[in-house]
Length: 366
Picture: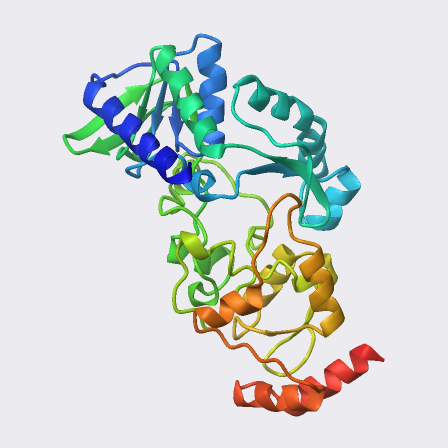
């Protein structure tokens, strides 16, 4: 199903582009055709608004189209603040309080929605047919007289003295300005923008890109140029730990190479010292590793933790591959040893302080 659906997205988008007239006015312009942009566009279209969605890539769907298709959240605001200590409690409350309404909206589209599942050990949610959902959203936009246009790069916002009233975009035929009373920027991710990574998160060579190619920060930069402001904390990001070095990391490897089990491990930096509370969550471990001077660490698990991780996959209802086996298959360093002393000798060969690694783990076990 996934391959045929992906082709259908591309085919539908191509037909749209061939048939779309040159439109200079509409009720809403949405910049970015991922999960957020298409959902907002579909909601507006269902209320009779003529919407134009502009996507810079050849296919719409963004990172949602290459995701595992989980729609989920945490049970309470307390849980939200534990997982996202730099988050906004008010926004977290809105997310949690409105989650059931969001699921009912998805169910109303007729796409497949699973029974409730556990996600990453602390969240609850549902798997959905994400590609069918994206197609449904695009169809709602068209039914209301709007358009979902790919390969349209937004280069600027059109402004009145006190408001944004449209966008300027480039396509193969040149520049066009689309006026609208409302403009939604829904393409703020910047995983593919090395300059923004360096400015806000960490050196670019500390992370591998785990997102759609269109996540280059266009919405962020457009918003800042129009006088918008950023949150006070930009360094937290959503990502996961993967083996090092990794010879390939395409979309086929995103899930199978992820060490979702890192909360059951001990993480040591190249000096052989712990630098985080590993139990907090894998995404927070990824943030901590990215922030280390070397951008890498060693993940150590004992047999009990390894068995526990195997028995408790990241999301119920799905089979998850063994990340140690998968990491080794793409050239990452993996070692299994019968004793800590033997293990730490190997870590020394990898460039870690072997003596300090041994001392740290022994002290941790005590």
